[in-house]
Image (tube, rainbow, N blue to C red; front, top):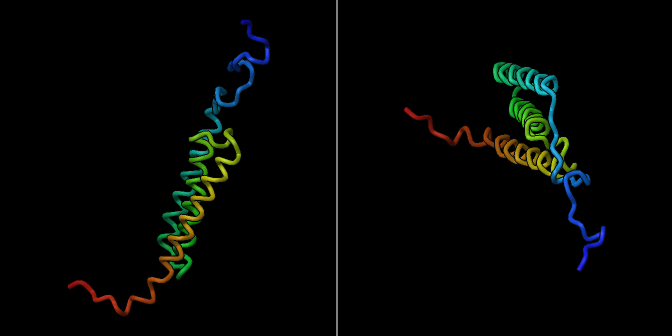
Length: 117
């Protein structure tokens, strides 16, 4: 029994996206690294400035940006299926949203909490 052309298994040369590799240039990686350093400085700056209830939201927004950069560039999701990147970034946003909403309510209970001697 002979195999026809349509029955041949796909090879990496045929353009199968699962077998393709992407090499990121050192220039791009260095650029993302510098951005991560800048956002780390912003995180430290936000922790030292009193923005009231917005401190948590700003810190979580910076964390989402930093996490997104790591996921997209260092984990190569930018060159993967767009749905995967979108799903992971949406999950990051929802986690930050849930944490932020839970922490916004902590001021309501400050009068009930007894200080530790």
